[in-house]
Image 1 (cartoon, rainbow, N blue to C red):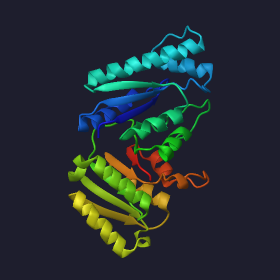
Image 2 (spheres, one colour):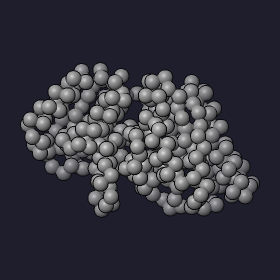
Image 3 (cartoon, one colour):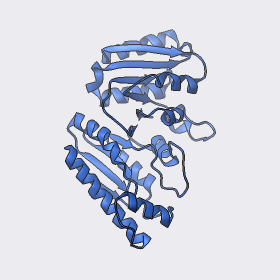
Image 4 (cartoon, helix red, strand yellow):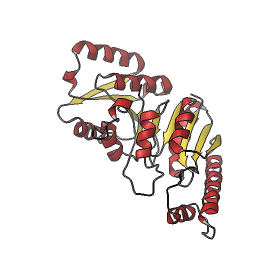
Length: 276
């Protein structure tokens, strides 16, 4: 894996995510390419929000909003480069000034992996997590997406969510092919209502998993999928969670939110999302 994107709002840089991003890029000795989304086409945030972002970047608020926004973006890029240098992370920067979602989707077409903060947002109104922008990226990106943990020390285990559907198998395969270094980690497969998958298919799946991972455990429970997933995942620690829950058709109707929403809201660990 050679092209890893660190996607960030240029006004709202989360340097705490660099611990995880540096770890991932270090696994492959790859350059970390930061995508700073400046959103010059349709800035919706208020002047007070821009001033607050400038203060967070360490600036004195004395300029007009337009120039202050530009100064804040410039400052955050320099903060990013300085932080990467201090951590020994090889980095580069793309400044994307158009529509944030369109820019990210285009970047993803020519990337191996996106690293994203779960709260990234370009609206003037408060949002929950994941934000609508993050949902849109996860459902439309043309490469896998990882939601980064805010605090990171290490990865001690892998957790795959499996329901027998094509989306979960695709995500597991994508993760396995991208991260062969993790084959010796403790690996847990979580299933809710596993009897819904035929015995023959469960056998084939276990056979495939055993050919790629050396320390496997299979956990299952019955009942509500969202509740069951969250309960099982909250028992994990320092895990990398793999889900295939964001196929385009699954979120076309927002009245039927993906199970990954509940997981991302309640689990403060790295979550890998891939879809067809």
